[in-house]
View 1 (tube, one colour):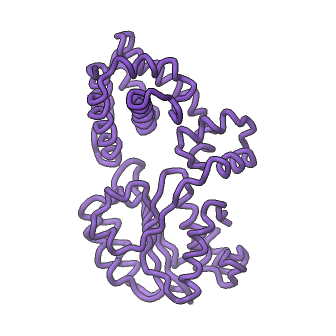
View 2 (cartoon, rainbow, N blue to C red):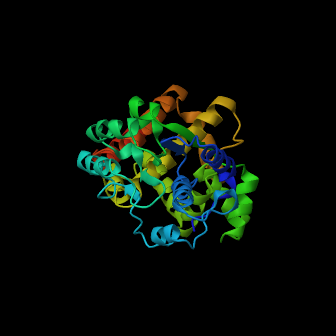
View 3 (tube, rainbow, N blue to C red):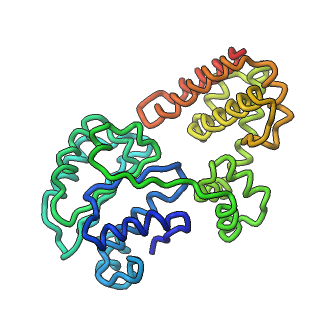
Length: 326
């Protein structure tokens, strides 16, 4: 069954208490950084609600008919809505079909549970189509919206859900978990956690994907843009095919480190700790106000990635802006 991660305990207990008291809301908005296991939490809660022999603490038994149907992916009262294609929006027709399903009674005696993720990928028409279902969900129904970017959801959607916030655990908890789950190098684990903002699952995924090596390659080329060694068009063409979202995050962390050093004169707490010998000279040369303007541009670009924006042109623009930043 889906695990309950150590950093989910408080949220799990709160939801189970609401269920036991008969006060489980009809819609939950699960929010937090990528890599904290929000979707895993929704799956564990789904299993709990369709289980016919719940164990202590509300954990699904894994053996009853409800659990077996869920494991087989054929439970009639479990529904999931995701984009039809990776990186594309959730469309209004998908939500209309979902709403039609949710208007019917449960086929088994228990809860109907639905998960929409990533919720921020719903386009405007899809969001509007969901409102009636959120307002009138029916008896014994739970709809969970999972998102890492709640600000991209409409206010009307957010106001109809109870928010469950997932916060990154402390570094000690993260390190212990990573060292127990496949990473045996403490220094690597620490570096991965810095880049994942203490999101353990993101750190573990980046370990398997050799993301640190890719990040080092990217930063080297990013620095070479300033000297003219790298061409922004060529570099954008290369990286848009690989990890455009990560590229923007790496640029954000780099600029945030520059701002920290330029503002305080200290490199304590920087993300790119192993590259401070590059950060200090740049922090002295670049204008602090210009760095803040560039950081705003990076943050806005990150938010646009879930739309139909031309990612190649976006990276080209960000690289050219970096070259011009003085």
